[in-house]
Image (cartoon, rainbow, N blue to C red):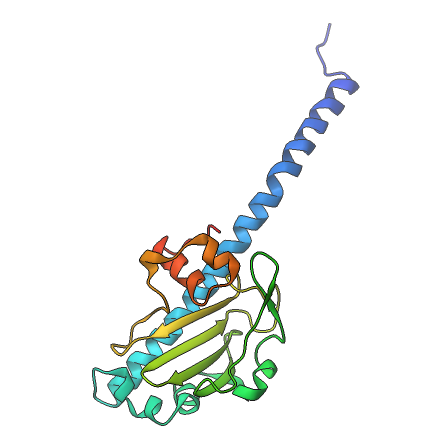
Length: 204
């Protein structure tokens, strides 16, 4: 006498596998997407850091704000140290970045550079887009790690980074004080600060 599974047993087993897959696959896909965002963000962060270091070396200074490229304006800094496919003015930044963004919570996220000092935007050859704003002693890089492609959400593919006078690229706000809730609500700079504080992990 041979042992075998009945059709009913096979169907029940397949049904259980289907239920488990339906419960786990979305989470796996979401985690994979978040890791993809982190990878792209780290690449853009590295590009900015290398550009700032090159600008200081070319000007023989240890202070980024004294480098010739940034003293001439963000546009000169971008065109000198990045490979770009398009450049945009601050008033027409939607030619480089998306026209609208949301927060992680789904509310509209307002992005504007008009009147915010000297700002230049560009689409990089890597596919990311950035606007660099020089306002007094503050230099902020707003980056969309995949350009106009979705999801166009602050904290997913849109971030604000600060270029410090020593050439380091860090968060606009202190990473030690960053909170997940503030990031989800769209507080300026909180998302990148949270990622740095958590060791390059997007857990919000």
